[in-house]
Length: 374
Image 1 (cartoon, one colour):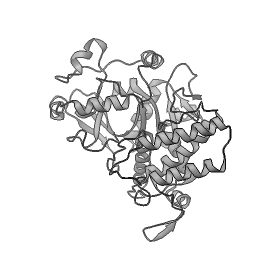
Image 2: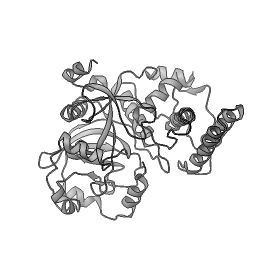
Image 3: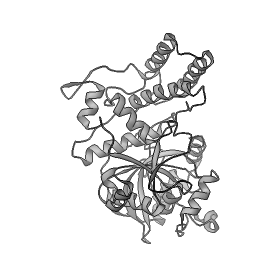
């Protein structure tokens, strides 16, 4: 998340036209999965929620339940509430920055429920767009005071609730939706999100044993959840199998400068010797050959970090037969107008820069699922 602002500014400052990329890369769809419209997380570090909620909205479409616009900020509010308490129990050594990863959205929905965007926009301040700069500063102040006092007073609970109410709006106890009354929990139950056990989070790193649930040592995994660890070939087979069969994928990874060019609608991972020329996008260069060892080295040297979450929604080939993944971002439609907020990520980029994914368990090939005991 820390590099996200710098990368975003670089994208905005660049004037390279996506039309140039389109002339170089010609994409043919293998599978293009219906999903909900692109949203804008704006000045917040809540990509984890936008990507995961988009993934869950796509699940509702896939399951034939229709198109829903769900409230990210209802989930964010409850995530903040849990993480500030976690930080207190850790004597101030927790993570109260905005970042999280996919399972924290599904956990919050399972625990607190969910509401439509029309019921809870999460903007209760003078701004047309989300902006959590001031909210985050006040949140840290309250968190620090409670740690220093070594207690959670009644005033602490009131302060936290009031802070969220002021900036995000009061939580609805009940609401009307299409002529029916719901609570956040009964709405989640109606959607089938009261039990999130079908949604599986996976990673692929060799410093832990494969086919086991292992810790993922990134700051945004602040609740220290364990993820299923699989070899890279299986990891990519899961992504490909999911998309080929109409399942989308929540993607968590790195926005490596030069390789990731959102303004041009593309992310590539060329061989190091080709990097300087390849990132100019003046012609197509071969993708890098990515092994488990190369991937591990970039993770252990912090070249690959947990920067951003997005949503994989389609599988495409370029004119040379190389696989690309159509990816829905949460930076609005205006950052790369020709692509309306989407981009194509090459197979090597995904292999090298992905940190973790979330999929429905039925999207995992049966032989891999058997090895995981799912």
